[in-house]
Amino acid sequence: SNVMEAIIFLDIDGVINPHRYTTMPKAKKTLVWRQALWKRNPDIKSLPAFTVDQVTNYFDQKACGYIRSLCQEFSAKIVISSSWRMVFEDKKLKAILDIQNLGFAFQGSTCIGTNRPQEIQDYIAKHQITQYIVIDDFNMAAFFGSHFILTKERMEEEQYLAARNSLRRQCHG
Image (cartoon, rainbow, N blue to C red):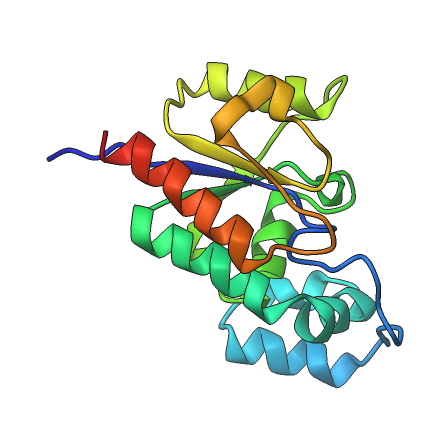
């Protein structure tokens, strides 16, 4: 059966980057070079050292694992809807995701417009997307209904299962 590719509209803060840290990330140049080497992505070297430490050591491993599982199970692609896209261009967003082994699924980011629901809706319309989920700590259920997954501090198992159920319904009828 020809399964259409599903899209995961991914917010970063409050989803895979927890809201509260107990300590602060540091700028470690050696980590930048090591990550660029380990992940075989030289674009990692163009990221601020602080960001590389943040993504490496402060992003939630479980949450990143949940996103990775969804991408693998549903051949889903990641479109970044997070405000991080205002700071980092697509090449750098992919490098950031590569650090957490999510870069393989990176497809792009939403265009910067008036508000997040509209930006996501514009992307859906432009690319004629039928199968998707939106994962965010800002409640957009009014716009996306059962396609929407709300997180609080970070993505937990409960939200992973909800995301999986939503994609299952969409992808397997």
